[in-house]
Length: 138
Image (cartoon, rainbow, N blue to C red; front, side, top):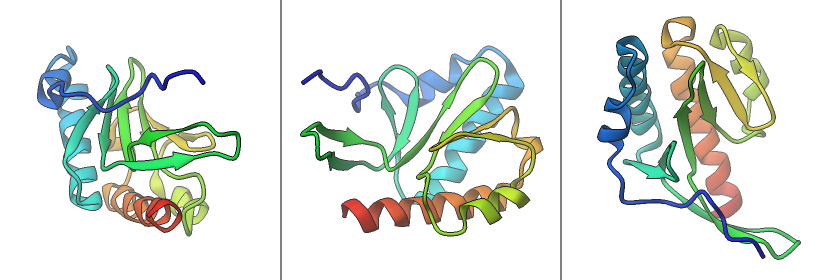
């Protein structure tokens, strides 16, 4: 089995976010971290070199692959923020319709800046996603 690349580290979240050169993106990243921390109830931790994760859970697939992952999190990519939420939390599609400007994939939601989205909807999505992960994995 290959070893998971994305594991929790001791790196500083503040140092990571402060390294974002664009001031608006840096402010958005700190605000995003605060929103997710408040909604999830977990402190931010670095996962790998570029993911800010909140909480953790242990998974084991039928294939035998297992590991740990953040319950929720985000990555401030160059062009957008990747939000890591469960793909199947209750009311996901209805909330996304009211969320604001975004793109979505299976478990990721991409936003360019916080001004484009409804922060209250983001908070609700984080709460529901964490509840869904907790229901499945404990």
